[in-house]
Image (cartoon, rainbow, N blue to C red; front, side):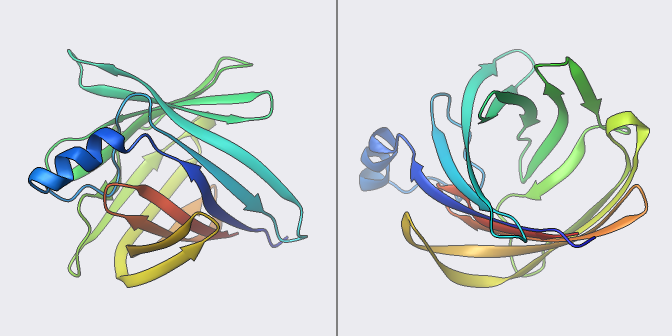
Length: 190
């Protein structure tokens, strides 16, 4: 079975405060900004052409553990994901499917999600287990700097390509990130 999903950012971000900072002195690059209250709305199209929408919102930051909580809402489904951002990285710790209280903790954790900022020599991998102890082998690498046009506008961004084997199935994924915006587009083939 072949599945193809394309995500496009449609709207969102509370950038007013960030734009004031940009006018003074540009902050360091950040392709996965996590500011509590920021949100992104995406449109997803599957291989058969069916469309759906979902929203991602940064809902919390724990000062002690330095963990960000990011909520994904698609209709009644809510998934909470937990990330940290040590210098140069975005690390993914776990996800919780709120409705049925199922938790996927990555072992060994945390899982390398994104080198931040990604650059021409960026490449990383992670091997371990996720939901229901499913084996995951994930190899990611910088794939170029591309202009990205989506319904929300035109962005200058970086392209990250991943080859993932999850539970024995091959998955190819391509993500496009924009500086101080985050994920702008993604495509997954499985």
